Length: 389
Ligand code: NAD
Ligand code: ZN
Image 1 (cartoon, rainbow, N blue to C red):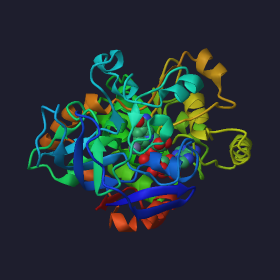
Image 2: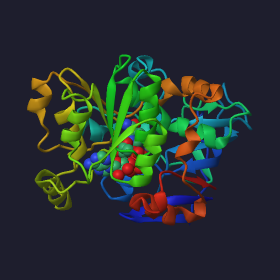
Image 3: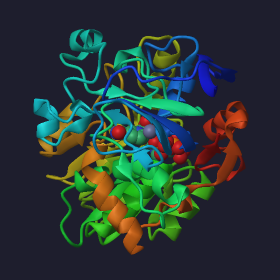
Image 4: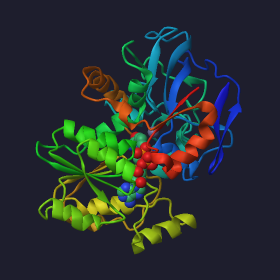
């Protein structure tokens, strides 16, 4: 089959690779109908995620048709069209039973390294390094899906592939980011990053009761998309983010701040942003955290900083004193996608969410290398690329 394989920083290639096969009785094999490139894939593309090996198949946002089925799988049949959560979960460990699916205790066969590095490992992830299990991803013609009775959600025929695809990741991620803000009616939310995750966080914040949402980015097309979703905007290259947020909130700061940027934050010329960039370039630091610093600094006293953006290592110059002094709550982590897929599908069916608005580019799997580059550089008003095998 054809698959998108990682060969090093800024080097992905579409290659012929062996077809996946049933390795465990709880597996199914999907023929991928539609897949997408995620902002998280850009962290791998940029070379910021350790534990990748040349030839690894990328992709954790995909939807497809069941073509082969393990002997123990009870809930799926050949021909079913399903969308698959990016985190792999067994459904029976302590974490899964607590509804913490992205923290599954059983699905990462390489958990030892993260046990050492982080104290404990999260779940296995599709296409996201050997630290997270080395599972082949779904930017391919076929993909093996473990624990097939637990993750995949069968789709009704009237929902299109494009409507359902983002249930795999970014729609639940934006939603969980907003839910973590514990909003009360009338709250003001600021969202750093108007990428796909930020866009869904904006719409989810309104669904969950926010009266105003302020989106922060520097890319005009993305800020326009945020405005279309009802947000006010700040271009962080043009305006001082803290001062503007204070002006917009009567000097109090937003009730909740969402960091939908993560470890590759761009600076606006500040000394700290330059410091992050130099340290990251010299491999002395793993993450650049201008967005997170600003979120903590601007959040109102007693507010919530919700962090869907991915961080990987040991963060430098985190304003912990500010977080402590203001009594902030910090919420973060990989999304528990399993928890949100069915209720969000119901929102899509009811018409209260139409996730297709984020799609700016449609390409074939064969065009993946170019698509990664366009998405990385945010050229051509690129917000989200979907790939059809
Ligand atoms: P993206 O790269 O398309 O968007 C990131 C946006 O942040 C860009 O528009 C960029 O211009 C903006 N940005 C950069 N620096 C900024 C700054 N200093 N202030 C404000 N905005 C800034 O990515 P995405 O797909 O929207 O994903 C966003 C983040 O969410 C990534 O870190 C991704 O890995 C993460 N993510 C996490 C989960 C999860 O389970 N927690 C799931 C999916 C994605
Ligand atoms: Zn993702």
